[in-house]
Every structure is written in C-alpha cells, then in structure tokens.
Image (cartoon, rainbow, N blue to C red):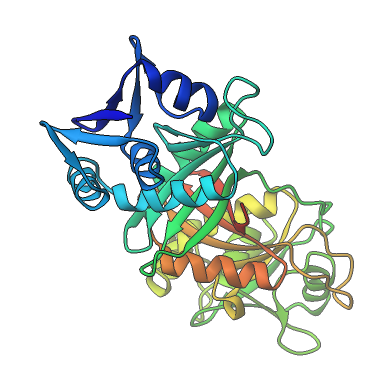
Length: 350
C-alpha cells in the first residue's frame, strides 16, 4: 500500500480505510482516505503493512525514522512507547496528551478510551504545572493518567498520577490547654510536665526530652501557637509574635512557610504529621493514631514543592520507588499561597 509523507502526517488512499482503519483502528479519516500519525506509520512500515513515499522517493524504515524525528519533537520516545503498548495488545490512538489507550478487549467504536498516556524522557525536566494540568484534563473526563518515562537504555517505567485529597480520622487531639514554651536554636521546648504529656500522648506532637518536658519541631510549634495552645518566648524571655517567630524560623529553614502550609493543611484535615527525614521526605503522615505505645505504619510520605517546581525524573523515581517499597503512598504537596494540592504518584504495570 503506497502512502505519502506530508508534513507531520502520512496520507493513504481509499484502500487504507478498509485495511487499516476498519480492522486495525489506525489513523483518522480524511476525505476518502486516511491520515496516519508518524508513530502509526512507523509501526506499520516496520511490519511491512505499507510503503511511504516522499517527493517520489520510497523511504526505507531508517530514512523515514530520521525524517519523522526531524518533523516531530520526541518522536523516537513516542514510538518506543507506542510500539510497547501495541505489542501488549492495546488499541492506541495518538492524542493531544500523547496517546489514548483503550481497555483490553475493547477498541475505538466499542467503548471509550480508558487511559491517557504522556511520554517523557528521564533527562527532561517535568514542570509540576504541566503534570497537574494533564492529570486534571484526564480526570475531568474520567480517564486514568499514566506517565510513561523512557530511560537512556529505552526501558519504560509507567507511573499512575492522580489528584488526592487526604482525609484523616483524628478527633480534636487534646483538651483546651495553654502554656509557655521557649524557642531555642532550632526547636521549641514546652516546660510544663502535665501539658507536655497531654500534647505528646493525646495530640501526638513532638518528642519527650525527658519525663517532664516536650520538644517540638518548628512547624509543630507554629501550628500550636496559631491555635492558641502555646505562647512562644525567646531565650531572653521575650514573647514572640506570629511574624517574629516565622521570620526566625525562615532564617533557619528557607522553605519553612511552605512546609508549614502543608503541615497545617494535613493537621486540619485530621492527620498526625511527623518528620519524614529517615525516608528522605518532608513528612510521614498517619490517618489515625490511637496510642503512642502502638504507632501504626504511616499512610503517606509527603514532599512539599512550590507551584513552579520542575521534577527531575530520576529523583522523582527514587522517591516513588522508596515509598512503594515500604508500602506507603508518595504524595507531592504543591503549595501556592494558602492553597495546597496533592499529586499521588505510584509505579504501575500496563
């Protein structure tokens, strides 16, 4: 079957409608003929299903592949993913997001596509805004969003990405209490033994310094301060205002207010939030804790990122792999002002 390469499309005649479109669901109808994307044409060319001509010259696979790479950004990456999905038995159609994938046993015309696939090289930075917009577009039409990452050896890793609204199950964690605390170098100490015990054993805040005194992290301290539970003094006894505390804390940790916004959001939604340092993340998060003597496994690992963040995919891959290996969900918390959005990213199989 003779076809023509025109721009970033391959055009076929009437016979292709029956042979390729009606049986294999390749391409799009255009007039009396068929229009194929470059990846579809390359796949069919590799299997001897068609011939491709450019300005009167027939192209072999190598020449067509080189031409396609010149005409479409990331062509070789998209071809690798398209070929992989086709060989797994899926019906795949190119789309604005890269590919639409139909459920196994189904095809275009029988049911709607189930999955949107976005293709990315491991070397490319991935703006979180692009990822959020792509996921939202998929979820708005009830599709699953898959990020297909092609590494330098052309191996594929698939990630399911979805929005998440974490919901905890913790009741109001402590009775009405109020006490003084002291801001030392990079943490805060609660001195009152009774209140220290209440905050630790009922609210699951901080860590006991000894049997009577509680040490709090900076985000825990500001949260309790904002709720009127503690008054914070500096080491000379001066009472600090909210702004004074946040200024001091931000000098210690430049991303402090971003972390605090996420901490507050998670606490307000009924979670217990602790440091995620040993997992290489900002927080580990529990939906429900009943006793400090019987702490369950945390539900989530959370990394806090700004709205203009760009993922380095090898770093993202490491974080997701670690979370999945310890049976936790990896959440990326995108902070923008007082608004916090969460992306749930996990490895998946196609």
